[in-house]
Image 1 (cartoon, rainbow, N blue to C red):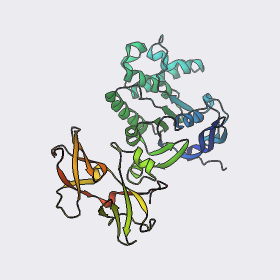
Image 2 (image 1 turned 30 degrees about the vertical axis):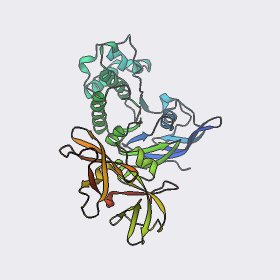
Image 3 (image 1 turned 90 degrees about the vertical axis):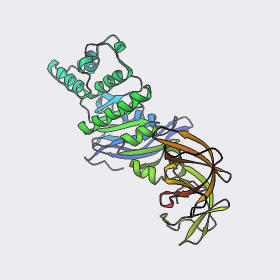
Image 4 (image 1 turned 60 degrees about the vertical axis):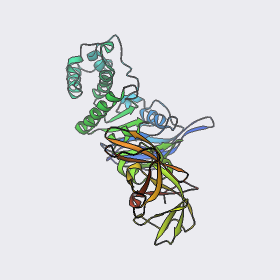
Length: 366
């Protein structure tokens, strides 16, 4: 295994973590460039927090190596790794003021008072918590407490920030506000940030790259738009997007040059799909299309597949229409000005150039 270059901020090389026969991480390798915002995304139990704790030094990996700024820190103490960590729980000292909470680690380290005051002032200005410095945690809202927790990491002036689901305890409005604050913080500081979440909205809005994880392995590592538009497999396609991508059982017919997806008794032209000849005629597939890539028209429209409206969910700026296409269910996102009634017969037109085809057996993208 090679030593990473100086341009690599964090290098994770063949990291595995096991507890007896339970393998939590399966030989993961990621190189994170300087200044990147990487999000580890996945459901509970996928290994994302375990990986973050290995990077932080809170867990010793079963195998593999971790480099930070080109230095092998696999066996270093957390305090020696040049990292700042923000947890899901605020972990503030209730008896201390905000100012004392921010400066506690620096005072324990024996830093000069002038330097401590300078760092606390800088962090409080960046996070806009100057008016809160003399308050205690019980006098703060959840969002203010999380800002203080971020500030405690910020005063350490480290190379890498690690976030372990920091917004999970906040309500929806506060989560949206803090997402923006964290994005601004990254833009202003330019430090490397590694962020763990199960919330795909957080991942899509914050990340330069997303590592989608499942059962201790990375399914896809890419920028948000690539993961959204070209998911590597059915798992990634289903995990990203709200509501999820529609998956319709289909079979390839026609020819390699003019393929057609047979959706039950209906046919959907694949003209415009990035066809690579990966699927032979007669192959069983799953035809994946996102709700916003379907047009609802009339049954008589050219190329439209007949469907029946089952229910409508008004979402404010838009609406989600659930329909029956033969014996399969499908969701379509439409403008809120469009109105449909239960039982109404409509025609669906899929944007084939935005569709994703998956092998029915392996789930891999074709």
